[in-house]
Length: 319
Image 1 (cartoon, rainbow, N blue to C red):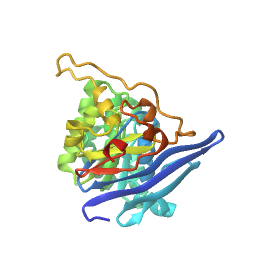
Image 2: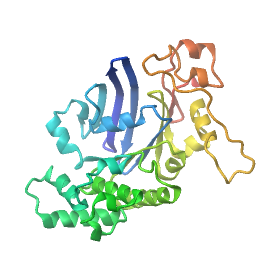
Image 3: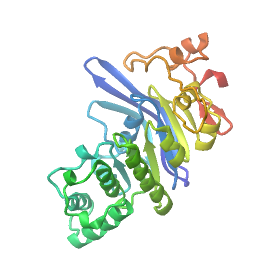
Image 4: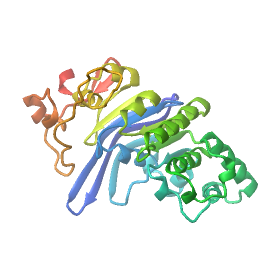
């Protein structure tokens, strides 16, 4: 593992065993997260981005089957004993879930959430230390320490999300996974949450994995971007070049489907069709039946990853 990387994902495969068949959620995903870097993972709902994020902390359901490597400090998280993984969560790698109302316990005060988190790693921690740590984390996330005795239902949706971010950074992890942190929030609150992440990026020594379908957020916060479709990485590039010159047809269509009020007379596009059935995947390229550049070869043969100017793209156009 490179000394410059906080996390490396190598040939990650994830399947869910269900009564109706095997769901091939992620296939051969490979990318890395450098120290102090923000990596955006984007794609439509069902593309495998949240599954990938949860796998980093080994939080997949019991019917999931994984292969490959998620390397942190030279060790594969996927093969770690559960006891060691529990010690890893929160302290080394933390996660901010997309729905704080279901993630926070409604009958526990904010202070109690921090107490539970810290006792998982330091059973004899004193309440004074908890208060100090919680206060610093809340202030960093834009929440007054005076609200430590409040319950989750006493906060707005945006403030609850800030509390979740504070819990995520409390133990100063090296990596934080933010899973759709602005979902279901109005645009004003979304901007406030983005400002929290901008502040964290400038002031905290941590890497961020930002999972979202919002390409605008990724453009502002990310250093590199992974574009996923039907469980596969379709494009992997630095954010500037990906937005300036997207290579994969799926990435091109994704960017065209984003409204931009700064461009006069811009025609808004949509991507026709829908994601393939992950239990019954096509033989060739998974994007074949929606791709405007599809050829007969694309239908029969699945493309590998091609390297183009320090970027990676899964498309026969770059053979």
